[in-house]
Image (cartoon, rainbow, N blue to C red; front, side):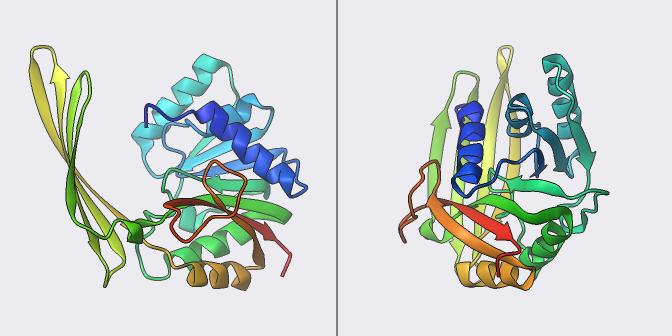
Amino acid sequence: MSGVDYEGWADYILAAARRFGSEPRTVLDLACGTGSTTLPLAKRGLSATGLDLAPAMLEIARKKAADAGLDVDFVEMNMLEMDFPAPFDMIVSFQDGINYLTGEGDFDRLAAAVEKNLCENGFFLFDLNRVDHYSDSDTTVVELDDMYLVYENEYRAAERIWRIRLTGFLREGELYRKFEEIHEEKNHDFGEVRAALRRHHMEIAAVWRMFYQEDAADETNRVLVIARKGKN
């Protein structure tokens, strides 16, 4: 993710909200990680909260916020069970956060939690990685200055799961340290997504090609979903 323009990402998020008549003052960033999306939103004057399950990432996020002089609340919590004392004007989730919800009924549980914690007429913005577009198994090698990465990809159509086995070699002095990770992302069917949002009083206002303000095509790999509460 080192090449991502998070500042431009924040501008894009706010432009999307304003396109539909919203000027949010409070925002909740789901699966915030080290705060790379949360902090740029806070810089733009929003009262920002970041939520994640990984305490180590949240510690990094808190340090980054302190170093930048930003007052941001980072909370260790499961997004499917979130419960805040006051609702937010906008809730966002990016960097495949929703795709990592792979359990049966997980998206419906998320929609229920968002409904509970989102203001009336508030917006829920999230990206979806169209992992069914990666149906062919393949291997990708990425060589960086201090790291060598091997991605082995496989899409399991019956389960709608894209499985990525990552083997990396990280330079540490004259040697390399090997590490391995397994990532699984689910292909969330748009019919199911729309139905779950409607069950919880949200309506999709637009599905855009990510980073553009234009409707996504069938072949678009990553999309931005913009949903509004209280419009159905």
